[in-house]
Length: 261
Ligand SMILES: [Zn+2]
Image (cartoon, rainbow, N blue to C red; front, side, top):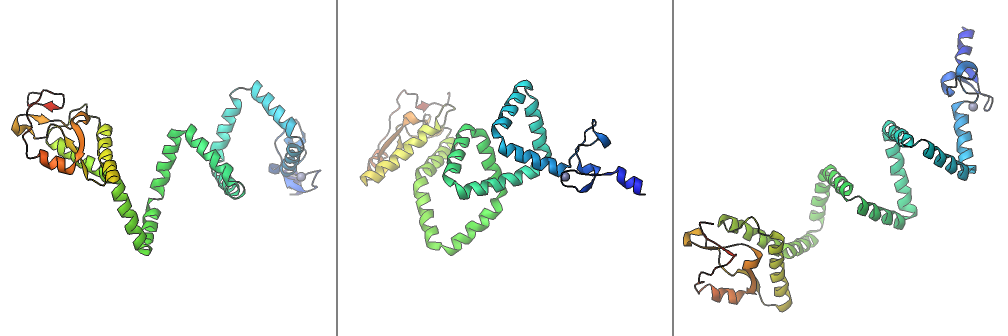
């Protein structure tokens, strides 16, 4: 019985503890096939060495990298895979400490990262967004209940800011129904005109609207003005109303399509 126990244990000369052989790194060249000191002592020694000789460690790593191209990356990838959970926890802790100690630097870092990795950034954002959706909905609901006034204000502000966009989208839908939007229509350019009308309204205090130079009459009239930027013009609302009382004559133009087109 005693024999069996001693073949499976060994005393570490550093900490003097008797430990199972599993607590020693394997080393075939040594007695019992294990290293002299226990894993804990080796680890402590290595950490102390790294701390006291940062230059030497850096040099040796650089040399190793040079002599074993690709190998380090491989083992690093394997290490990350095998220790994913541990690394995540460590990263979370590290970030928490950075946030506390040097928030400015963390912000700079994060801005730089986002600039250099736009694809990844979008992916992360989408993932986080989906993950927190439920929590966010609850928080937002609670906030709205507790701050009805602020909610009203910000909603009104949002609507106001996005009104031109909404108008542009509604007009796009209408134009589609009228079959007046050709494939080459540039919707961003069209939308910009709606924002321009809103800007003029805001700055002059006079209501401005977006007008189709050649009206979208639909095919029942035989011709159809197109919903394209070159057929759009910003005019005042009163000009627009005057115009509606007049007949717009047929003009040869890229802004017009006929049923044969
Ligand atoms: Zn030991």
